[in-house]
Image 1: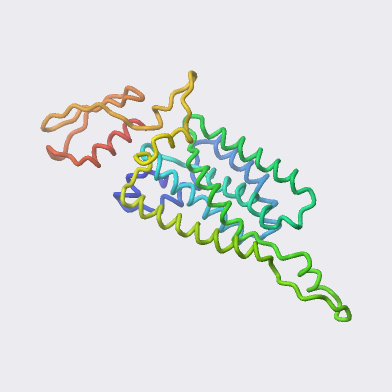
Image 2: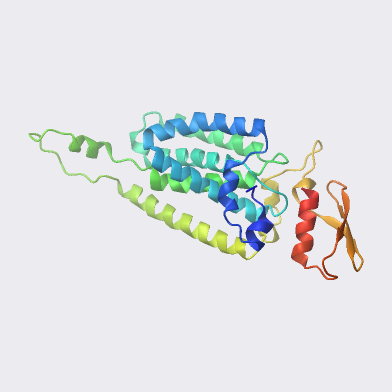
Length: 276
């Protein structure tokens, strides 16, 4: 129905799923939780910066979350707006940094925001929560905040509205460090999106290059298991059928083979669907 399923993105060229999955949810409680988060975070940002900038930031952050999720979680499906919401959180942090001089209680605002972000990311280590979407959305939103949420200097605003009879020293609209952060963030974001898409469409699984990264999305504990996050199957094959058992949930099924030698990609897809 538009959920993020890596096999269909890579092998059936349904890249639109990286966007469509942002507006799908796994149930009533899931969508209500995201709506509440959006009410608390999104309204204030939209009032200050407008619908267009926050709308673009929301969608691009959601795309970044989907992209990182697809590169690490290759089994099962993923839905939800959490990546986009974490993008809004990330943009709040970068907005505070780039507009640092205009805030009164800088340190208190920074500490509060960091605590909120850390607590939300910590929830992502529970099973069945796609923390890679959270991390990808947060990083995307953090970089986009330097691009979309830059504010002019207070002195520039004062000069703009000063009466013609007063002589005011000319000042630039933005500070030098704001321009530098704008350029660096835009370059990093474009490189990340382009390289991520290239790797995804080539079927790259980043877990093969990072043996510990899966702990970022699920930390095994005595009260739960992370095996359901990955599809691993035991298989026995005859000429016309394959008996497959998923190790994480114990489910067994027999698949009729279209030919005697199914491709490795087909077998992996059957296993992922079987373990979902």
